Amino acid sequence: MLRLVPSSSLCSDQAVNSSSSSSAAADQQLVTLVDLPTLKEMCDLHPTYVSPVMNDEKLKFIHNLMMMVIRVIVKDGDEIVKRFMGINVLENIPELVKNEKNELQIDADKWNELRELTLDNFAFFRYSRGFEWKLDEATRLIVKMVNWRAVYKPEEIRMEEFTNTTCTSNMMIDQGICQNDMPIFYMWTNKDLLDNSEENKQLKFRHLVYLHERNFRRREFKGTAFQMNWIVDVSAISLSLVKRMVSVS
Image 1 (spheres, rainbow, N blue to C red):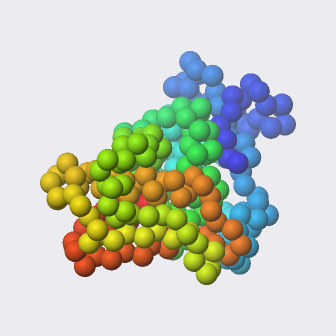
Image 2: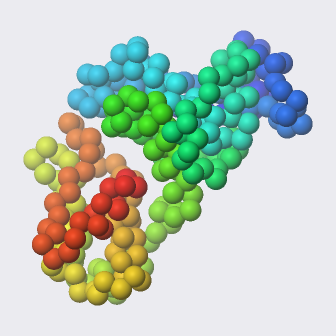
């Protein structure tokens, strides 16, 4: 689990070039990186989705992706990565990543919280494989995702918000496991009892986010399962709501 910790908490053989810090970081307690995932740790994440494709080259890519994300969203990220790698100059951040809106400059504690709740090793693998091992694209989408979560706060959504609205129609159900052991999400748009006012559109989307979040929090992935199956009847509406959900998942 890649974490940021105070350099002072490390023994001397763990600290890496801590004396080479810049004056910008000199006025605060220095932090450094520890516990980069090993090849075995990555392979152990999943027997069929991760293990068959992981090798030293892919592991290096994931390490580089982690470093790039730290540089973009963590305060003094460049200096932290420089100290960790023992170098004075880093490659430029790709333009594709620079052009993605980013309002985060988080501290070490917030980074470690993200690693526990959102950006664990499996998440970094999913973004790496999902975007065909393209560093700039995978970084951009992770930056977009964490910025969206910081504003929308999906982890704070509660079922009580929908008890008297979207829940009354049984339009969305996330119970059940299919034959390949993957969780199933059902959505029947023709059961929708709410009109398509802007307020209701936001409410339906929020309910979708809640169900998506709940499934990943429950971690109902076992055996060969590694994703959620969506079964959506869109005969009653356009695909815009589904497309919006996919864009932030």
